[in-house]
Length: 158
Image (cartoon, rainbow, N blue to C red; front, side):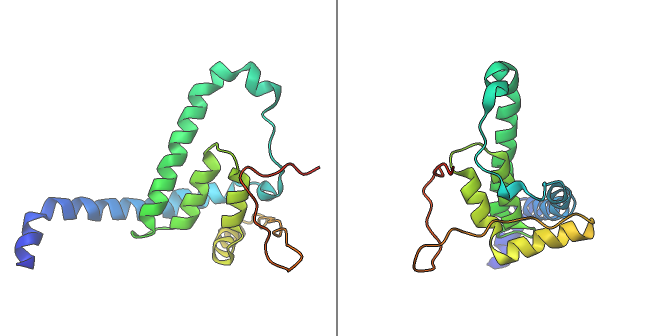
């Protein structure tokens, strides 16, 4: 009975196998390239102010911004798929989030990159490319010594 089902789904199983191999090879090549190009102080920055440039050239920038966000969504979806398929799922999700634009993005990025396994994997890739390790700020603590919960968007620090 199982063999009959497999024979009936042969095309789908081949497509899933090919997709799995493409995501594995893609993450082995593309993700390290992106990771080594992240500035070492990327996660230490404050909220960014779009400034005059974005207002002045907004019609010219709009198609690029839309494409960047679509690419970010593709990375996030691929990252979630890689949690089940071979690949670096959490790092791919992080890169996708870095490409997206939404309130509270920096806090979410910092929360992901503070995970010891994620930070260790990223810094290992960076070390292989002779790049400086990422500088990750320590989370703000409450009086009880627990990590302070931040609401999205981040409150402005002065």
